[in-house]
Image (tube, rainbow, N blue to C red; front, top):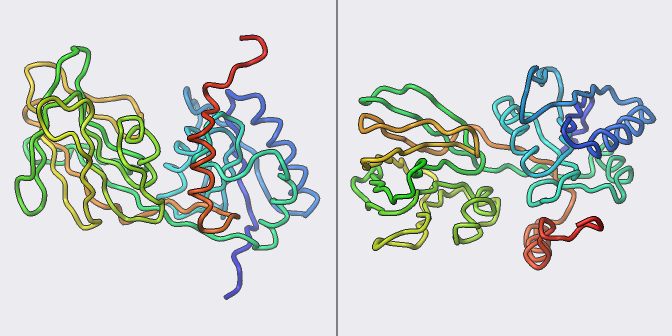
Length: 290
């Protein structure tokens, strides 16, 4: 099989991270040396005023941390455009490259010396009296949680086979394997290898109800309904939450689209990198001026 070699690349450094722009300049210089068509779009991921033009590119290189890559993934996944992450932030479960040997790995990229990793996504639908009002692609997790009041809520879970369980908790996470190293990990959930096409259901601070995670098959249809006299909210991948009322429900299924990521390491890279991150959390590192 002829290897995929990108011909038109979009660089998307995080505009809020100065190091990202510097790395984008290094990458651009390398691509110019190899006469590769490319564009640079410094994107403000927190306060966007202009959206990137993804169409026409066959690869996006995003420069930042995991949060930056996650947001860029929402642009790339619907179009099936592969995504390569370069680390300029602190956490790196998802990003593939750091500044060490950056140019060497870019040469590998342009020689087709890499593999594409397909990661399952979810689709979340927000229903009101049974009618779909909004729909989202989910890379990490969908979350139903309590709002401003520090009181537990009840979340009823129905599967396509019927009633599954009700949780009394601060909230409920439905995550992908990719999301199992994000909020679900912080909530005490298991770590799933990225190639698994499963859903993970996990309560947050469960009270007098099941506190274990449940792993579901790809074909499951998950329906969530919150029961509470207080505010309940719903959020996807850390975006701004929306309120849920008694007339609302959430339906979650496997997404027909997948997030495609460029990988240079061997298939067991995930466990090697995971062990290093868990032993040394970069967020907790002291700076010289702390």
